[in-house]
Length: 412
Ligand SMILES: Nc1ncnc2c1ncn2[C@@H]1O[C@H](COP(=O)(O)OP(=O)(O)OP(=O)(O)O)[C@@H](O)[C@H]1O
Ligand SMILES: [Mg+2]
Image (cartoon, rainbow, N blue to C red):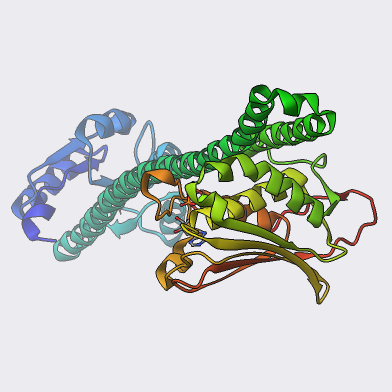
């Protein structure tokens, strides 16, 4: 702290003796202090403090009206926060008792008169130095508090932005998951529609089939199954926002029956393929292939795998559907003798929207297949080489229920 700053201090003298305040004023002027005020009526001190804003008070003790002790007590009572003005008591009676009382009442320091000029000057200097340092610290504290407030508000703002961005990201992810799922629903729903349209057209355009009650009934049953499967597929849209509840039951199903139904359902679409006349379907079914699951979803798996196998068989070929039991599992294989897959296609074929069929494929079939297998706690293996056909091997746990429905356990 430099000397010039100290000399800018405001010093207030409070003494009933005019001669004493004049003496002190002269002395202080001499040693460089110019911002001085004095009062001889101590009751005016508080008014003076408000207007003059002293950095130091030089206070007499024995005064009429309000003595020095009362002034000190009042100063202490009126003190605001940490901003205490130092008080140097300058008294003609510096007895031990007066010193003790004055210090107890809040005096910062005390000097007896007559004062030694150099000691007086040093004491004033020390008190002012301490005062200015304290003010500086206070100012720094305020500055720091202000900075902390600013930073806190910036951080709060940043946090708000982050939370908004996070909410938007989650929303975005949900939207894209919804888009993916909706695409899958459209994909599988149109498969189901193909069966409905195909079989109803066969009935409509063939009066002899309508006339044969057994055939008509069989077609109607297939149409009915395809319609119900379509309703199940569409319900996935609702399940997206309202997760499945306890009403979603797995039933005990005969996988072999699901295979025959799927072959029948796939027939109209397979019939559209030019090569179909040269594709031979074979089934190699184990006597007992009981699993727990949702029939509509398992038919979706099979029709998708059959369509893919047909698409991969441009010329002659065999598509085999096989079931067997192995190590507590039901193994279902869809085997074709088609074009097969490169290592890259094999690795990517389960990705949603991955297709090698250009505009003819959505790339959602196997993604749906994989999701359904997972929901049924099954696993999927794909064996394929270019030119050597493909085998899709699915393993399901054998149903542990006998004719009873079990709760759908969703795979993690
Ligand atoms: N049996 C198969 N033989 C050879 N490649 C296959 C076979 N099954 C699937 N693939 C490959 O995996 C890709 C992804 O199959 P996915 O069923 O997901 O979609 P897609 O068949 O192309 O389209 P969509 O199912 O809408 O018709 C196919 O484009 C094809 O390249
Ligand atoms: Mg497909």
